[in-house]
Image (spheres, each protein chain N blue to C red):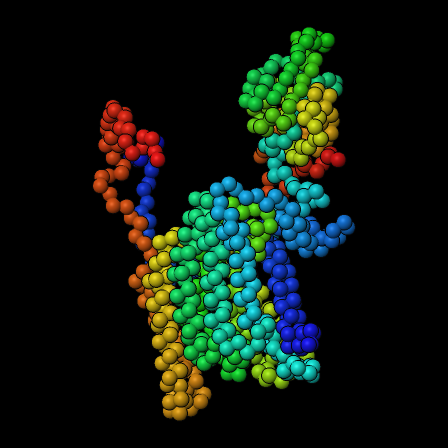
Length: 435
Length: 196
C-alpha cells in the first residue's frame, strides 16, 4: 500500500500551509495596520517602537505584532465561575475553525503555470479545494457557522454584556445575511456559476467588473459585508462604550486571541469576497490579460494585484471605522429590512432582466451600444433606487419626543418635585425581597 | 441658570435635507476629513528623543521650585500660606527664627510630596513673596516614594537648574508679561532648556 500522499493531496497540504500561515501573519499585521491608521487619523504617530527583539533596530514598529501576540498568549486564561464550560471553551474554537475553513473555497490568485508533476492536473489553481462547484455556498454556510461562535461565547460566559452582545449579533447577522445574499445573487446570475474562480474569470474575459455592471448590488453587498464582519458603523455586538466588549467580555488570554484573530479573518474574508465578486479579482485592464495559460511573471502579478486590491478594501474598512458613528440598533434594523433588502431585490430584478434580454439587446443595437445599454440600465436602477430610499428615508427614525407638557415650565416642575417630596415613599411590593 | 433664562437661545434641530438623506455626500465628506487627518501633521512627538514644547511656561504647571533672592538665600518667609492653600496637603514647612534682619521667619525645612501634589498652582498664587513657583519641567519620575518627597535643597536645586531658561515669573511679568510672550512660535524657555 502506498503510504505517501498523492501529488494532489500534497499540493493541497502545501496550499493549506501557505494559506493558514499567510492568513495568521496577515491578521497579526492587520492589527498593526489598524492601530497605525487609528493613530494617523487621530493625528498621533502610532506604534513605531518595537523592531527586532533584543536589538535596537526599530523598523517603524514592524515587530509590534510579535510583542502583542506574546503578551496576549502569556496572559492568564481566566475562566469566570458560572460559565457553561463546554460551550465557553468551544466558542472560540468554533469561530476560528469556521473562519479558517471558509478559505478552502476562496481563490487567492489565478493559476500557476503548468508544473508537469505527474498526478497533478495542470494548471494548478491558487485554491485549496479546486473545482468545488458550490464555492459560494460553502463560503456563506461557514460564515453562518462562525456566527455560532459569537452566540455561544455570549451565551456561555454568563455575563449580561456578553449575552446582550450575543443577542445583538444574532439579530444583526441574520438580518444582514439577506441583503448579502441578494447582492451575491446578482453576480451569480450574471456569471452563471457558483464557483469563485469562474466568477473572476468571467469578469476578466468581459473586462467589466461587476461593480460597474451592478452598482446597486455592489453597494448592498458592501454594506452587508461591513455588518457581517461587525465592523464600524455596525459593530453593535461588541460596542465597547456600552457593552464593554460584547460577546467576548469574559474571555481572556489565548481564547480572546482566537476571537480577535477570527474577527480579523472575517474582515479579510469580506475583503476577498468584495474583490472577487465585484472588483474583478486578479484582473486589471492591460496588465494581467485574461488567459488561463500564463507564465510565472503573469501568475505572480495576478497574485499581487489580488492582494493589493484586498489590502485596499481593508484600508477602506479601517478608514470608514473612523469616519462614521455607530448605528443605533433600530436604525441598523431599519437599514437592513427597509433599505438594503428592497434595494437588493431591485438589483436582482434589474440584473435578471438585463441578462435575459442581453442577446436581443446586442442583436438589436450591436455589440458595442447594446453592451453599453446593458451597463447603463443597472446604473439607472441604482440611482432611482437610491433616490427613492433617500426621499422616503425608511432608515430614519423620528426621535421627537411626544410632549405631555411644556418641558420648560419651571413652575410645574417645582410643583411636581414638591409633590414627590411630600408623598410617602412608595415602596413597590415587587421590589421587596426579590426572587 | 433656569431654562427660561432670556440669555439662552433655544435652537430647533433642522430637518434633514435631500443631500443628508441621500447619505453619500455626507459619507464622502466624513471620509475626506478622515483622509485629511491621515496625512496631516502629527501633534504627538517621539517622546524621549524629541521633547514636547511647552506652549507658555508662564502658565504651565510642572515641577515646583523654591526661588532664591539676589543674595542666593531662599526667598521663602515661612508664612504657611502655600501650605494652607494646598488642597492636597502636600506641603510641609518647619519654620524657625530667621538669621537675617530682613524677615522674621524662614523655613528650616520645606518639603513637597510630589506624589500627592495635584499641580493646581494654588501655592504659587498664594505666595506673597513669589518664593514658590511651578516650572515647565513636565517629566517627573523617581524610583521610590521617598525620592519623590522634594526637600528644600532639592527645590532650590530645581531653581538653580531652571533659572536661566525660566526667569522668575514676577520679573517676566514686570518686564511686559504675557503680552510680549509669543505663544504661537513656541517659547523662549522650553522644558528642554536646563534639563538633563
